Image 1 (cartoon, helix red, strand yellow):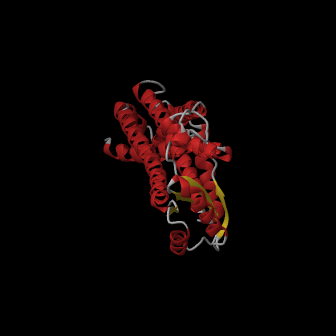
Image 2 (image 1 turned 135 degrees about the vertical axis):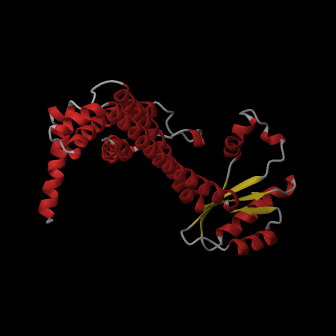
Length: 307
């Protein structure tokens, strides 16, 4: 078949699906248990898919942010006796200033350290009465620096200085975020398979309930493809309507989630951002496509069993 012929066949199939056939549609019950089950299943699965999609996209953003922001930052911690800590801090700062690959280094103020400790110890922490080490924030260029060489230089110039390049905890966090994103996509796949299974059961139940009508329709010359088309159209429309309702409800629920905030860390900003809001719009047509394939397969298989 030529490309033009294939395009015409697809157009005819879509036209039949949209327009339908009243005589064929009479074979499929317009209401009842199967209609409710199909619509409810599609709506529920679409609602859950919105959340799985939001989780997957949010964790993807989180992994990219951690990888980009933390990859080029590190910290030098100076722990020394009170009478030496100022001198060692200045010495470590001088070492960092002359280290190739370090863009800038900055001694953090006591106020900044208070803000870092506030989530754990509260806002009234008496920092001046505690042996809190001094911190130096280090920002490197895209090529990075020689961490081993820098540690040796710090050990010689400032014995109380310790370089933390965040590798120990950055890599597991990024890996965990990536795995969580993968689990989100797996959940979406499982939801699609569950939708297909439930719609298949509903279609087979409807076909079995209308076995007598199908026999009569065959006697007057109807082919199985003609009968199956009516089931496919009715169940596809039910799935599309249910998935649309579920997607709208899921989108509203996601929009009501807390927005991203610097102090909110992981449990905020789990919704969609910007153009990502277009992703939920793909759920209803995909649900209709899943329903189309599942119903057509179930209908043709069941009709072969009906004698």
